[in-house]
Image 1 (spheres, rainbow, N blue to C red):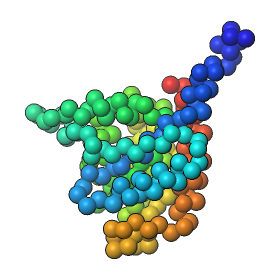
Image 2: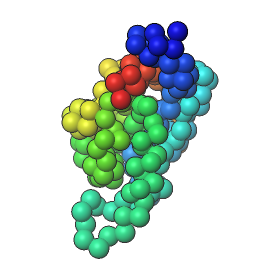
Image 3: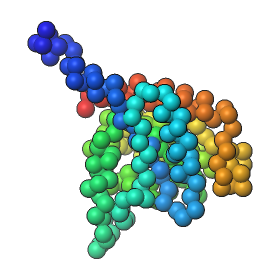
Image 4: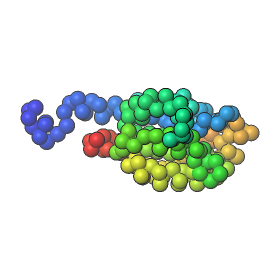
Length: 197
């Protein structure tokens, strides 16, 4: 039976690995006073109830990632960043809209790596004055170049209706359903892409 598994199907070890996907919830802002950690923790709490993957919050602020290629900069966090991303089978990006796009910190963190991103799936949870929609659309183009397949469902949080005073995250009940619908797409796409890595 081992020969047939090798020839026609995945091994039990592969199946076990696929059953316990690792999904990184990436906080895309490093700005002082940011609210993104609240959003990331909320997504993780919803995701953990599902029991369909190992969900980990990954905060780019925890890594020393100066501007890519900056002369004399301390990029000592790059190796740890590479390792953290490489371990993941898929992602949920927590995206803030700054001036109609993503943060410079997120773009820089994405640019630091290449192969670690390839052939993985991602969902986007954005926020801003128009739900972060413009930032999410910019991010989709970048993800495509990195061979990350982003899913269609996109929870978009409004600074006016999902935050009190722009700082205290209190999402409307409908947003939880949107996060689950997004993860309903991220998980099977992550499993499918696992098979080609």
